Image (cartoon, rainbow, N blue to C red; front, side, top):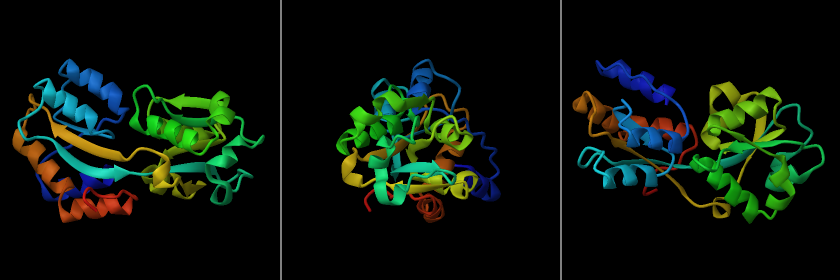
Amino acid sequence: MGDLVARFSGSHAVDVEASYGSSGTFYAQLLNEAPFDVFFSADLEYPRQLAARGLTLDGGEFQYAVGRLVVWVPNSSSVDVGRTGLKGLAAASIAHVSIANPDHAPYGRAAVAALRSAGVYDAVQSKLVFGENVAQALQFAESGAADAAVVALSLALAPAARDRGRYAEIPLDQYPRIDQAGTILKWAADVEAARALRAYVLSADGRAVLRQYGFFLPNE
């Protein structure tokens, strides 16, 4: 998002301030008309539910990416995630595994599904620690508060984490498809600016940035 905002602002006279958190937490805030203009969700159901409640601009919804999951360990870890994948999280050397809180974070729900699909959830359940969102889950592993994390590929590819750890992508058939969608809120202060940001994210330039961070794109 930082790259998208920087590139968008370079060609549009619009100041964009991004706030980061779990999709479910923002959804709860938006039910009370929190002062945001555009909502980028890691789950298309949240924008759909807002639309069903009449809280979005007509025709404001859009799908922008399909997320992917990885298991991530810091460079100091002895676990060869490239070889073991999720099954390596059952190793005795792994005491804590961080994921986003599945109660309100779509990537957390996907992580739980992946652990179950790989047959290691029972072995790993007692090791789980929950981040408020998927970014905090990665921070736990980066800081040493957790020994490994199941997080978004986009975060593993971001400059902040790229050189600090190793990851292995989790097969797509091990968790539900993570369709990410957004919407423009009915009370947006500047509707045209919000539409311009949406158009940029869906443009060839915006899609190139999303690909760079490991996202699949809708209809691809």
